[in-house]
Image (cartoon, rainbow, N blue to C red):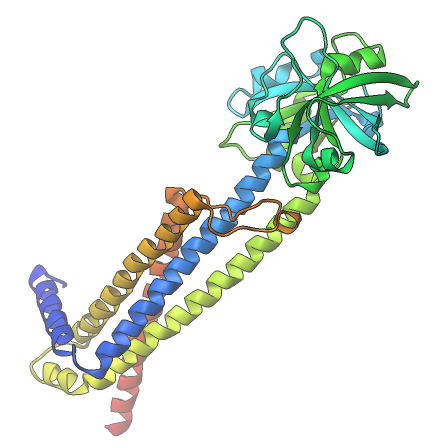
Length: 413
């Protein structure tokens, strides 16, 4: 039975062994192992924070503009921008029946239009935003101006476009452009550019513009309660799972179509899945290298202290006590390396968050700097993974060494 006196004895002998080994060869190996675990821990922490940072940033951009789910009519399956009328009564049950999942449900109108400038003509998807709700998340992406004024009694002839379209058409803030519809009839409007936004997501920046939803209803000759669809925004802790999608489908009419944002922007989510897969492979290789290093350290300590092991056995020490001494020193090295690794990894991430030292090419990575997601779970989980994996590697190494000695003893006898 492992008593308190035995634990104190194991710790005493382990500390004496480490002090006496300060000038030995194993001391240099111990420093190398500590450095290796430090670099490995820092690399895993940084990789985890960056990977989740990419996922959070890109997912946030997409959901801020398109929500988590989109409700439209089935007639829009062949052409998602085809006029499809949805009444408010068809989706009114969502918030009342799912208050713990749904943050808000906003109406929208959207229409394909042509925008005329002195440079040329460009097709845009003009999206009318609901004047009954606030759109603070969209305002975070504005680099100039504002969103169309939704506080007036009547609609305003105002338009907010992306920085990509503004450069392509040589449009500046305050310019007036002519837009016209082609379906069902051609109608013209002069709109003033009041805002310019930028997300670095090509599927959004290349064609999406915002105006007052009441302007879209006027162009379509629709009553105020008729819209193209509704956008569902989930709460921060809720994920758009298949089960939730099936629940929402049961609460809306059978003739409505529910599309998740992940299906609508599959390309970006596939890119995030590739980053996640590469990060996992990177972490596995680091753990393999660190595990092999720890195993080599135990073997070196065992070979260097073979005389001490023999003396302890003569004095009556059990094999598990000797193993515990070696395991204690190895775990101390492991924990020391993890502490240094956490300081290094978290320190570098803090520098990146505050100073954005490492920049990216927006055309390839959809943002201008390396994103960092700092949360206690993102720090704790990699540490538990490292500690658990290397502790298991150390345990099985000690077990294999003990079995090898027993076999050799049996052969000699």
